[in-house]
Image (cartoon, rainbow, N blue to C red):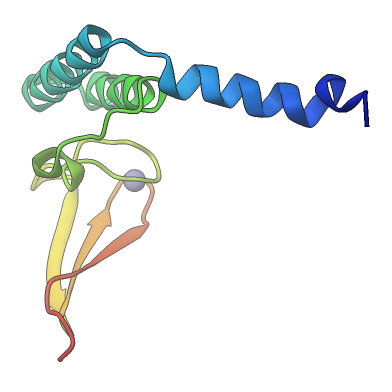
Length: 118
Ligand SMILES: [Zn+2]
């Protein structure tokens, strides 16, 4: 019982706590700004590999600072390979109350509900 504080689980929990909650407000604000900027750059980038890197970086920043990626950007990238989806490298179809988005660089399909079941 007296060794509880030295248990690895305790350190792990402490580590997660420090990482997620000890971020000051101004850092979160900067992180949100950077995510926005990176997505704008990704939309402008001529090279798809470059756009991929921007999206990956934005995602990383969001995870580190516990900042959500805004809803308007959420469907702009592939969640499997992080490529920025434009009309020339993706396909969108509506089928059975779902929006299917197919990414051409990894050939995977993301499905989003757009109709709520009554
Ligand atoms: Zn993909």
